[in-house]
Length: 279
Length: 301
Image (cartoon, rainbow over all chains, first blue to last red):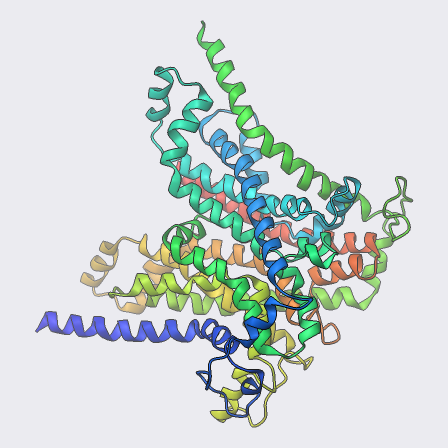
């Protein structure tokens, strides 16, 4: 009798939970479904919750013409990958250094990384513009890559530092006895066993850069160089209220993020709860 | 080899690991912050932007922006926006965290699924909510009219009275899962025995909530509120894409105002001054947060 009641309670809660989740994630369903409608259907008085005829016209349109999304998509990909690689090269060793060594000013270094996560991008926007202009980096991929890395590097360092601290110290000592250098021990022993942490850090740094609007918009004024986020304004002024196209644009922009999320969900939630701020 | 010698070598290799990142951050964060600070006391416009020497004009930039009504409007909107978002996100996030902690089969899967909203680019959330809130084809107006809550569609983002609520609504959708996840982690860390022994002593559920859950959840509550404050107070993307600060400054916040001063009106030094005002607000709250973290670490160690 008791078992029956608790399984009934369970099923009831499952149903309520499912309903809550469906309602909450409805906007994501809506963006997807609207991208498959014709604009005429979107503006019908009676809204349809499933397209009367599935139409890919909103997607097909974007592959051709002057404002096609092929170039912006690859720009986004290049910037996000570039920022991920740069932040990885600088961030991972620093995280390890701050986890395993006694360094002068270590506490202040960690604190200042924490502080940088609170900064509004508008604070450094103009000075960075002038630095990039001086080195001829305006309208090059390097400018958003560098600017986005200023968000990713502190995240990687703070996140992976706690991760490295959690690894048993004996690992490196054993490698050192076998004749490895400090760096050798780090590269050959620590990095391979830290894959889950590193993958989390990498996916976050990719997403920070992929999602960035303000840096790309400010440092890339040539339309051909702009990533998808920064292209939104051109796109909206051209297509106005052709919502099916705008939603299709959104779907393409959101897709890589959702894929990363689905594959790495467990790790990403771990990263969220580690006390990190979104950039 | 003496022991001190080894330690010296060790110490040095530690710096090799850390220095590249530190140099990068000093060059691209530290230096720009100081530069921006200096610039807010200089006269910098489109003519002098790239020149080597600039005239120092004291507090003139600050006087200028504080005497224009836009700054006060932006500060007011930023505070309203932040307060609105924090209350909505926290209350709903807390309720969901408690709900998804009741112990049922799908709870972890569903809770995890909801966090996807937090990862979505704010630009896309902005487009999506702009569409959903639109008066002619938006699903929200459709549902409100269909259920009889309102008689006529509301131009949420078009009317000066409702625009700020429109962007608060959109941002809360991103913030709710963040609050929920952090509070959930806090909830699961409360040992179940506490509730059991309270039940034996005959405590009511409300009593258990106020004397066990809330006090033990305090660190998690503080951190979601402070992190939420920082993230919300410096909002840019969402508002820039949804309303661009309009209609007539109804959703103008400090970030969008500072951006416009610098990159639309090319009044760079006034933009720098406005950004510094934003920075000071964040810094004060941020310092409180750092203090909290320090205390937490001391308790841990």
